[in-house]
Length: 437
Image (tube, rainbow, N blue to C red; front, side, top):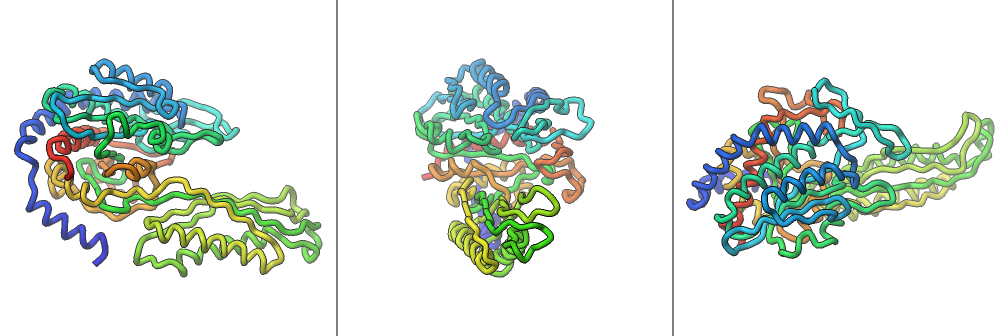
């Protein structure tokens, strides 16, 4: 029985065996009422942030908006964390554990293509190219939902048995070239300390999941993301006399084809999924010159640490051996980027009843892992963490026809934001009232 099958069975048992703690019932009702009243405000926050997007490590105005809001609620506020990050601390009226809630703030170098009245018109220079800037992954909704949860929880400060730390993180999409940023920098600068965090929760809206639905998975939920660069060096010659060359373009084509067999023929895919993608290839300057060197770059995705190491080893061997067989050389550089987003198994089981209470058992769906990556993983390496998906697709739509994340047509149904606000608030109060032992 694989992990998915086991947890399908476990989820059914948990639904029967667990209900929300009795002491949380009244607080849940208050959270629901306040989320209803706050919904229009959360949507307005989202629209303002959407219309004024900022790229990674450039989230200055977004951070100012967040900090102003948290200070108005009486939080202890830290700014400039990991360059533009904001951390708010809400100390409850009673002693207890510390729970963290995280939202990412950055937008993407994507030109928005829709008729929304609050569509982004922002332009900037990215990697020496003029580009649009767009919240094409829903981070604007994440910020708005966490701001909403903060406002609700602030009203129940005296009832909280512990502390809630609100983490607004920059650069989830990756820092600009030559800079550091994101969750790993937040961790390095002590965001999980002072006070020490006992558990952390994060949510991500999804444009292909129906509003009102939540998806979760224990253990490996999102893939590790590693970058690679392969330089193939041959011998330059006139394009009319290829026999005088060692053609790195032909060798590169053979390497690309060889790479496709690593996942399809050399990895045990009944264990976990894996991906190797070549994203760009550069070489040559004109039609009649066979160049000396070609460079290709790409990404490696894995949901299992052992498979991750195997993929690295096989990529090196495939590129180097194919190049050598043609009289060329290949140098392979692999940079580990984002770890596996790994939901703590006991914490996931412990908090599943909270999700089922707020969304309804039938709307909390055990899902398969995805090969996208998420730097929430860096927090999970230090403390137990849980990351779940919240629906942002209008009811009755076909998920296969919805614009994907990171595309110009990306769209979110804002009626899904209220569930996100409630999710963050429920997870915080339920954990504080009943922490993982």
